[in-house]
Length: 129
Image (tube, rainbow, N blue to C red; front, side, top):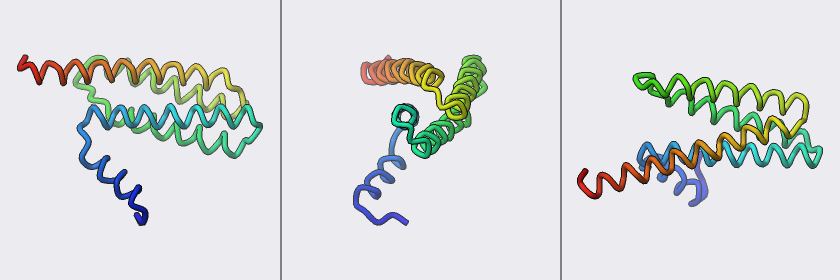
């Protein structure tokens, strides 16, 4: 149940966002969860670690579900996402920041690439190309 105005705003934002924006929101969530999971490892707060790395895994599962396999790049992205899932599990089990930091670097890189692509497409649409 949604009670707060902020939660209502978030729900409206999700329901009205274009697909490219939704994808960036997923990346932002995964990045935030991985960072919080890493800080949990550093703080030796393993409940925080587990909760957030599991949330990051859930977001990556959503990214996999969003793939359109009509395009060849989807297979490559799927493999990258599966590798990231594996690394997050390793980070969580071993309470090791190294694999989580690796995943974070991939997420940041992919987010930047999608952001650039979305801006390029939007620019082309605005210029009528």
